[in-house]
Figure (tube, rainbow, N blue to C red):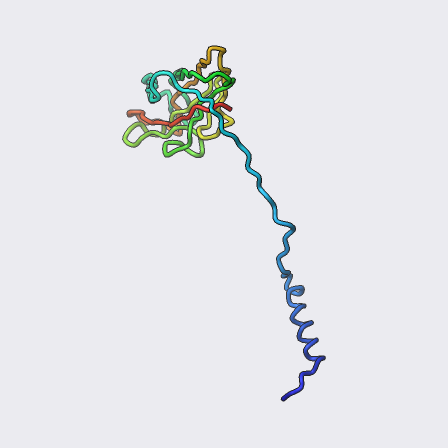
Length: 180
């Protein structure tokens, strides 16, 4: 049996250990693992839309010449959602949910196929601030009255993404009533 030279073994170990240092590689090192804590709550409070949950907002017909370039707007149309809330609810808002009809870049509602071209529907809060659909901070809450009633006021309008082409305008958005 051959004898192992201890000096050769030590040189081999030293050379092997030096490779990561020479190549800039080092073993991965992490501090203690982190922790995510999730907190929330469920409440028995609720708010419900009075009347039908499904509404139609009829925008006025406008000429496509009013929407000749991207960024032009026309046909401002106010609409409301009346809600009735349980006692104890102080604020309420509609959360317009992200979905297939929402343009992720503009936050506006894309039209259903087969209608006008280069047009979207933009939503605004009562104070005229733009609602980026699917982005909660853009949706304003209102106070609930002592009688538990609140009127959520919004506006809808045509928004040009380019030179608009004439045609029907149809789209939809889902919403949830929230108590922030």
